[in-house]
Image (cartoon, rainbow, N blue to C red; front, side):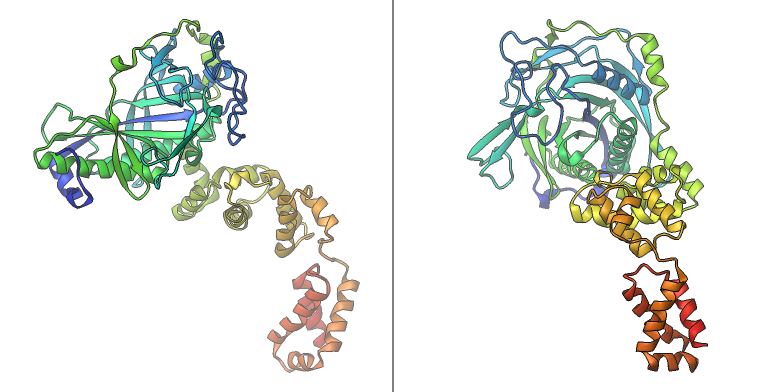
Length: 501
C-alpha cells in the first residue's frame, strides 16, 4: 500500500499521538529586479507570452550569461535578514535535467557553495510565542518557464490535450531559502509551517526585494514532510509537495500529508519518496519519484566566474535591513493604541504599512485607518486588485484628511474626491476644485438655501416650533440637496433651529 484515500486518512489526534513530524520547507522567491538573472531581458509579470526573451534565456548556442549585480545584492540582504553567514566565496553550478520549461536543459543554480548559510528566523505564532526555524542555506538560481496545460479538468498535464509554454519567466532571478529539518513541533507542525512562510513573506516584502505575490507565483513553497514513530531517532521517508501557493494551503498540505502518511505506516505500508501535487480542495496526489542530487549531475558553471562578496559591500547592505515586520507592527500598534483584532484586520487587508505611511504624511492614525481599512479596501475589492495597487498614495490620502480637517470637505464629499484621485483626475485639491466639491462656508449662501427650504415646508417649521426638534432633519436634508452636499450640515442645522426659534 502506498497511497491513502480520504476515508483512510488517520485521525489527526492519533497521528500526533504516535508519530513525530519532521518538516523541511523550501521557499522560492522571485526577485523584483528590473532585468533577469543572466541577461538584459525585462523582468515584468504579465507581458504577452514569449516577448521578454533573448538568446541567453532561451539557451541558444553561443549565448553567454552575465550575472545581475542587483540580484546578488538582494541575495545578500535576504541572507543577512535571515541571520545567515554571507560566505566570502561561492559559485554557480549547472543542474541538468530535461523538461520543456527549461530551454537550456539545465538550470543555473548554486549547489554545494551557496551565498548564504547557517541562519535562523524567530517566527511569531498566533499565541504570542515564537518558534526558531533554522535556515540551512539561501542560494541564487534562475527560474524556469511556465507551462499551461489545456483540456484537463485540473489544469495539470494529466488528461491535457495541449500544452503551451511561455519563456518570459525563464531566467527570472530566484532565491531559494531552505530550512534545516524542523523537529519537535508535534501537533503544531502545520501551524509552524504556515507561520514561517507568513513571516518570510512579510520579511521579504519589507526588504523590498520581491512583491511576494503567491497567487502570481513570485513566492512558492515546497513542503517536505516525513513521520517517525515517537522515540525513534531516524527520520522517516519524506515527500515533497511542490509549488504550494497560499499560506492556508501550506498548513493544509502539511496536515494532509501527516494524516496520509500515518495511515500508510499504520497499515504496514511504506512511504514512497516522491514529489506531490497540492489540490486546492485540500489533498495531495502523486507527482514523480524524487530525484537525488546525483540524478542532476551537478558540475560548476563554466561560463560564470565565482562570486566573492566584498566585505565592505556586505556591511553596507547590513545597514539597510529593516526592523522585522512583526516587531514593527507590535510597536506601531502600541503607538496607535488599537486592539489585536483591529491590527489583525489591518494586516489581513494589507493596510498596515499604508496606514503608517499616511500617518507619516501628517494624518491622525484613526483617520488613516478608517480610509485604508474601510473605503479603500472596498474600492480594491471592487477593482480586483491588492490595496497597494490602487491609484492613490498615502500622501494623497493624508491630503484628503487635511482638507476634511480644514473644513473644506465633508466625509461624503471626501469620498467623491478620493474616487476622482483613483480615476486619475489629479491631486485631491485639484479634484475637489475641478468637481466643485468644496464645502460652502459663506453663511449668506447657506442662509438663503435655509430660507427657501423653510418657506417650502411650513408644516415642518410648525413641528420644529412645537418642540419636535428632530423634524429639523428634513429641512437640513433639503438644504444639503439644494447645495449638492457642499453645505456644512452642522451649520445648516444651527441656522434652521435659529430661524424656527
